[in-house]
Amino acid sequence: VLTTTDRAMLARSTLLKGLDAADLEQLVDGSSIIRLARHQQLFAQGDPARLLFLVVEGQIKLTRLARDGNEAVVHVFEPGETFAEAAMFMGGRYPVWATAVTDTRLIGISNTRLRDLVLIKPEIAFAMLASMAQHLKHLVAQIEQMKLLTTKQRVISFLLDQCGQTEGAATFVLPHDKALIANRLGMKPETFSRALAQLAEHGVRVNGGQVSVRDVMQLAAILTEE
Amino acid sequence: VLTTTDRAMLARSTLLKGLDAADLEQLVDGSSIIRLARHQQLFAQGDPARLLFLVVEGQIKLTRLARDGNEAVVHVFEPGETFAEAAMFMGGRYPVWATAVTDTRLIGISNTRLRDLVLIKPEIAFAMLASMAQHLKHLVAQIEQMKLLTTKQRVISFLLDQCGQTEGAATFVLPHDKALIANRLGMKPETFSRALAQLAEHGVRVNGGQVSVRDVMQLAAILTEE
DNA sequence: CGGTTATTTGACGGGTATCAAACACCGTGG
DNA sequence: CCACGGTGTTTGATACCCGTCAAATAACCG
Image 1 (cartoon, rainbow over the protein chains, first blue to last red):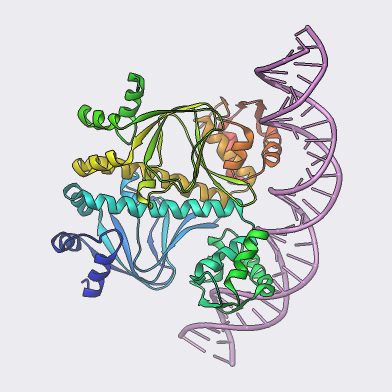
Image 2 (image 1 turned 90 degrees about the vertical axis):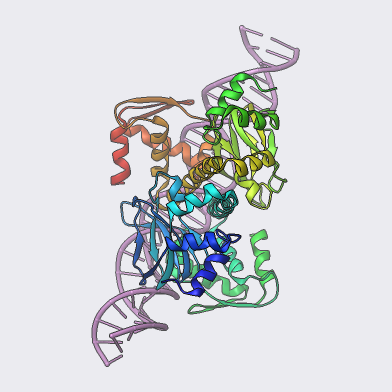
């Protein structure tokens, strides 16, 4: 039940681009559409990993849980991104929880089908390696931020990421709940809220999910001096 | 100038085990031995990535640097482990600094040779994917620890890792400087020192690099309740 | 409009970084 | 053999930041 739009997204994904029509078809054959409501779980930590995923619309967060119920957000995936490629090489079990942040539609791709394809077409292996290298990079950046930056710096860094600009004024909407963002940044919601409030004096205005930055460059400058 | 011991280690590595003699030979041909003195740098962040590495003896730490000179340790690699496989898929540049923790001998393997080999033998691609999946797992675990555990819990968790036992009494030596360990755990040396001192009341005795734990299980129990 | 879920704001205490100094350890050179 | 500087570690005092708890407020949805 994949629409043509779904197929197009598959064909454009970092993981599968470069695949010819026939190979793609074979993969699609073993794929299924999955719909999740907000807060619904895709898989649990420890579940056998039979599928990897492409987010079509919505957002999926990967988390780890502590005994006390607290959760640590490892990453949030956006439409067009694939995840859980690594699971098939890690003892065949998912090492994290996956939950829908908003209503989500995604494509589940068979592990074994992909595996078979890699054996035939080594180029795909490169795509997988590239994809995983990307994830590695993200995680390293995250560790770096947690260890080297103060709370305020992390918030600024996050805002600058969202801007997608290096200068001038910018406006954008936050990608999700402030509580979730706070978790991504390794702080409590209250702390995040206060940090944002403090940034008012640096030209950051927040209204609901709407954020406007007066001067991106000026904001970036604070990272260096503070 | 690879000794037979070196070759044996290559053949046993997660990355290259399963390679037949001929393929291994071709790879060895493009490899070189590198010796580093303690604190000497292997490569810098941003350097073009032409080699990936196998640690033969010694230890290599991967770090990120902040403007103020502080560094964040991403990982420390031990003999038998390979690293920097991912670099060839990330724009061809190393994303971190690599420095010898102690006097170190390692083997540098040519990126392009390995690449050629993958195209011929897709099984090697699986080995690379598995190796990178392993690194991903480590990083995820690290992020989890930083976000979910208190300082004391991280120290305990680290000690338990080093024990390699789940019960009874244990003795071992710390893998390196306490300052480096503190950095790995995301805290300052002073904090680490105090944390260790506190653990005396839970049966942990530290003398230089020598550590002895009276009852591993009892120590593990603190993680849950605290 | 009422009930639930987000977010903000305040007061407070604890934990960690910071600064500083004492101390232990080690190899070197006198 | 001892003095010595360098490095690594411990210990202490202090300040500040963040987490926690609590309540108020705002936004949202049926």
